[in-house]
Length: 200
Image 1 (cartoon, one colour):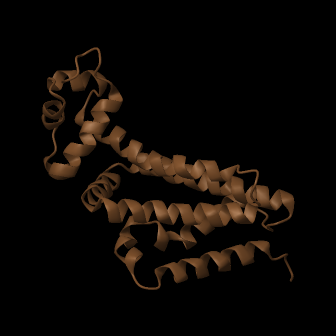
Image 2 (image 1 turned 45 degrees about the vertical axis):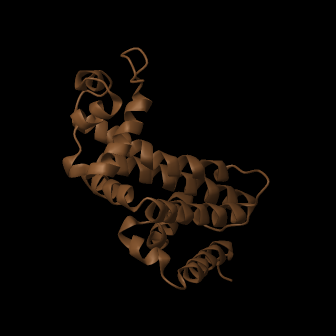
């Protein structure tokens, strides 16, 4: 049964938009297609999202937020040391990106196009991720596990150093033989570097 104007929610619209994007791709997907998938008028969709651009931005943010939310639980995990949290966070980020690319390649390709168009949403997402990393590294610095004068700058460096394992432009490499061993080697190098006291 199609939703009425009273039962139509932003979340239902975003779910339908994702399915339409999966089917048609970002170039051909329209608000009319979304409305048709929901069995409502396109005006009903516009009551929640004023423009097609706003709808695309919201659905892209929702997709990116799934990764951020999955990682957020690791940041303050009291039962793990900062070193364990850093390793877990980087491993979870790689697994999440690889999962998206491998299990739903059409949608992954679609969102890669959309994120290229929506710089503001991507900037916010990257700021959120590096902010999470900063909190882990700052906790490690406070406990003496890590040694860095600037946790924020170090977090950005760690993020960039591991880019091969989470930047979509490297997605084709994520199923290469030996990629897991290469990932572990990079993480080990970073953790050891952070753990080493200056001058030692």
